[in-house]
Length: 279
Ligand code: C2E
Ligand code: CA
Ligand code: CA
Ligand code: CA
Image (cartoon, rainbow, N blue to C red; front, side, top):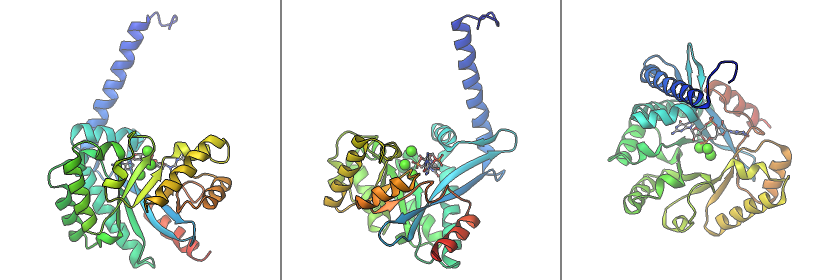
């Protein structure tokens, strides 16, 4: 700071300016990302701890710009939400995920399910349920093989409308998961009110499993509660054998994380499924 001769305020302004211009740049580039084929999906398996089978894969969006390189989804999804670009991007993601689901089905995995992350902005649109159903019909995908990942914060406001949407999705045969469970809303009363199938325990709780006793007791408590509510539990961000073994012992239903594999492009994921199947 001294060397450049700038005071704190000037540095602050400079940083603000840089952040603002990166955001504007990304927004401009993101508008063209679909047409320029810069978006793609990777898939991460979710393993059933009882059968050791891969029962579903989660689709995760990626954006690679030719000059800017890889931009993380945490960064570009937020920009997409703020600019409304999330609607065409989400539709692109869902169609691509359906195409790849069919690719997995046709290549030996007819029953595998596809988990798709839903943005709050998309979910809150009027006609969300119908537009989703239309997309799945158009893509010729059975809704019974679709899981939607929602967050606590997005289903909490306007409870009546929200419940209606969730009930309709459920009636279509779609499975509903709560993503990042434990990080959002403080009340648990919604767990009974909403027709949910799965809780995905946030990675932050899994980090402590087998290292700090307190964190694993939170995980154990979530698993016990989920069992009482007839919800399945996914542990996310499982990175070690130690964590896997402990979670399995605590009868956690499903495991996802680098311990199984990092998210992979569709063709690599298919190879992974084929090797796993032979295990
Ligand atoms: P998320 O839905 O909670 O996704 C899980 C994130 O954890 C992914 O990061 C995944 O790559 C990462 N992960 C998986 N296993 C491990 C592990 O063992 N250790 C660690 N440290 N991380 C692991 P990613 O792909 O960077 O996505 C970040 C977030 O961006 C997602 O969090 C989700 O909220 C959002 N996102 C990604 N793709 C989409 C999408 O298609 N649509 C929407 N609306 N949001 C998306
Ligand atoms: Ca997710
Ligand atoms: Ca998550
Ligand atoms: Ca997350």
